[in-house]
Length: 289
Ligand code: GUN
Image (cartoon, rainbow, N blue to C red):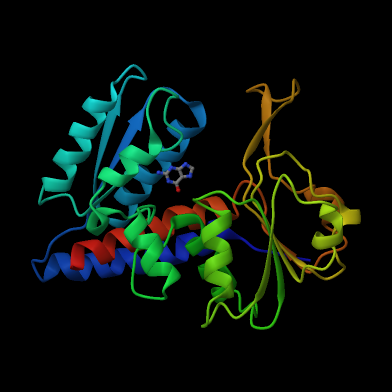
């Protein structure tokens, strides 16, 4: 089985980005600047945002982290979004999700200027993507597409099954892989919590993309021999033998599938680093606009 090493591939792409930033700096151009808004203390979000900021520094981007307590009001958060929209030094920004329950993610998302929406979550960017027009592609689906492309995994004519229909992964993934182009041209089935006989669908998949957030739900009996498995899940499961008291695992039973499939992403070190890299590619593109 081939391990789809997102960590190594992301390092290669970051090196490419760094060289491009160095060239921009030498020419006296604008250094890309990404801002991230983090509300509250969600442990996973803190790790993700820290990794995003750290990655920016590695390639020579500027970065700003705006932290606010979970008690922030919707109006206050909208004011921050408005300031970032207007600040000419900030090329792109993200508001890390999930937000605390009292804040409305849709309202916040609608307030983000699509030109600075390097997460690719606003209606304009999702609409442009759907029409096949140039846009900021959502980070996780674009990271997966980049990975399939760089590993030379053919998608044209393949049966792709996507587990999950979220706005940030499942739905855009389905759009990207079914549209004309390369990677693309796949026959895509989207499954979700109301899908009957999930295994019937997953067993047909040449490429299976799991983004459901249920630890190790996809087991060996559910997949076809020789399939390519992309595991988007990052779940914490209790494990008293670990120093932190938990271990990280995906939506796929990695150990169980290892002997059966052709290629698979590990967790951690698979899709996660690719997500960050595609956010940075979007930020570089934003700074060039
Ligand atoms: N939460 C989980 N993934 C993401 C992401 O790609 N962007 C943002 N803003 N929040 C997330």
